[in-house]
Image (tube, rainbow, N blue to C red; front, side, top):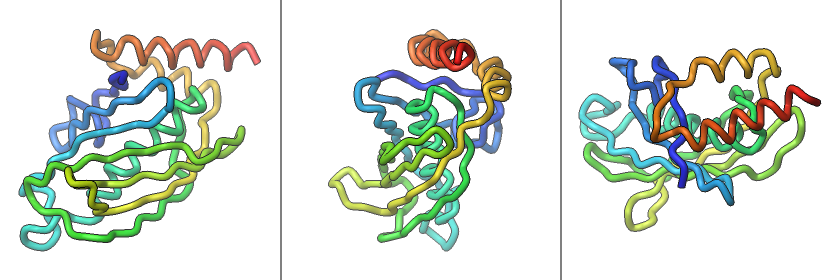
Length: 168
């Protein structure tokens, strides 16, 4: 598993965002499956003791956008997102989010993801359609990634993808 790079201010993964989730996303370079552990805290509740559904949707979106980005070797934005909640998540739960690409076309990448408990129970399932940004936007986005030895290998793969894209 490769640790995916981050941008400083990102709500999902940014270490410099004081309100962010500081997620640590990883990708299996062979399958493209993105995983992220997530343990919600008291600050993440909607109703007392129950994690806010919008927060879970944000974590799903973060994992799915990275799965789409890895698949296309170009950063993507969310064009459509749907989430089905199946059970409540509680404060302190040790959850795992997993996202994988269902299909990829040049202008749209369909991704599915789940939020699971350690026993495999599904808390939420999501699907999203992700749109690759332009090569120029992608190049600008690559420059915002934090240089970190832990993410160096994934960063190199994404950079090679950018170079290939620029040649086309």
